Length: 120
Image (cartoon, rainbow, N blue to C red; front, side, top):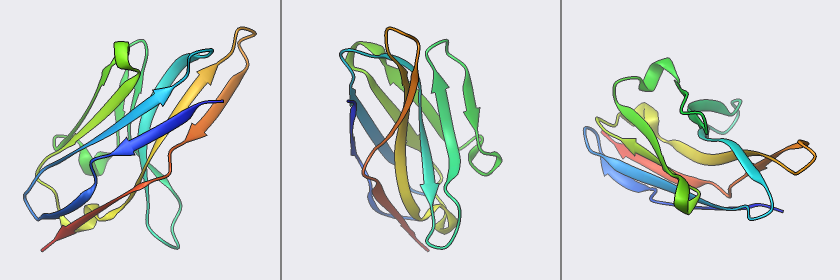
């Protein structure tokens, strides 16, 4: 079992910044990738940013140049630095981890979600 603990959401004015953190407890698994998704009620959860253990990064077009994903591998923690926030960034943000066990079976885990609200 892997637990993901998120923090860092909140209320910020447009143009401001927030940093989200997601710490994974995965002592018996290997982490393949960690990332952030967001979900607006009534819409499909969408990728915001993803980071693989090999260092590959993917970003949604809407956040390129404004958001940066990084990690502290020693802490199994991934961060999402969000700058120049816009009201349309308002959403619940979810951390996701893809991990493998010793047999290379992959499992997907989600955090509980953290609310980000950007006021205009």
